Picture 1: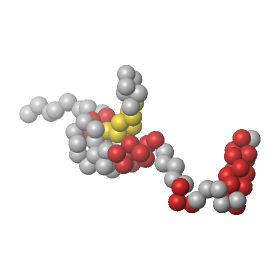
Picture 2 (picture 1 turned 90 degrees about the vertical axis):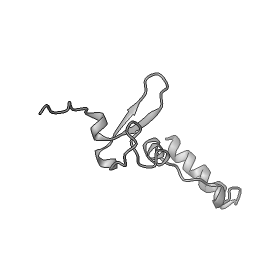
Picture 3 (picture 1 turned 180 degrees about the vertical axis):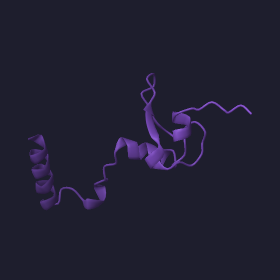
Picture 4 (picture 1 turned 120 degrees about the horizontal axis):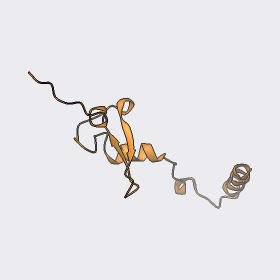
Length: 81
């Protein structure tokens, strides 16, 4: 139950005015942070993407999370004519 203890400690510090509300930064998830850093563009083709049809891929070597579009996530061969 460390969450309850952390919350109680936080509330106690706020009541004692040890922490200013301006010092508190909102927590953003890792996926949301990646989307904001990439400005809603694909990491491969640089096209604007819809986050619903995007895929998050973690590079195994660098451990960096990237956002790619559905076209780059599922490559399809070009049609012959």
